[in-house]
Length: 132
Image (cartoon, rainbow, N blue to C red; front, side, top):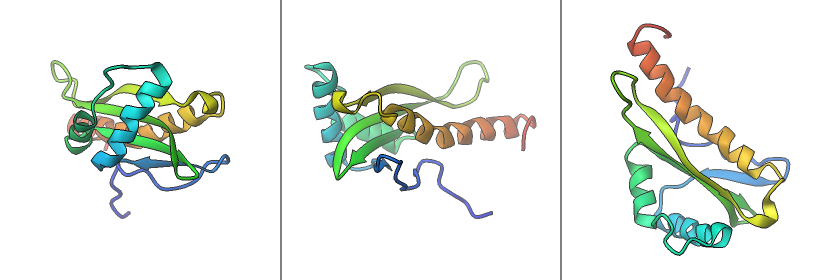
């Protein structure tokens, strides 16, 4: 089986034509700053540069797009674990524009997080010879 990068979400549309993408550019992260203000009214959102660092250091930043417009996002932080628990991804924030709530956009974002989380869990369990 060919290696598939667990941090790259396959580009496929949902039944609503929502496209979930892995974000790796600061321009995309700036859109997330804007979304945080629109969704929750944050006056100090998680900054774009911090989100970029998260994406570049083992975390994951996702965007949900509809017709080229970002309508939602999520991000997970890489964490080392405590006392031999192994690395894991901590889902810090998921947000969806109010007009898109109750349309499964948040659910699609959470589903898109699963392959990366499974990658860390499997790697840890294989190291412990529990699952390989």
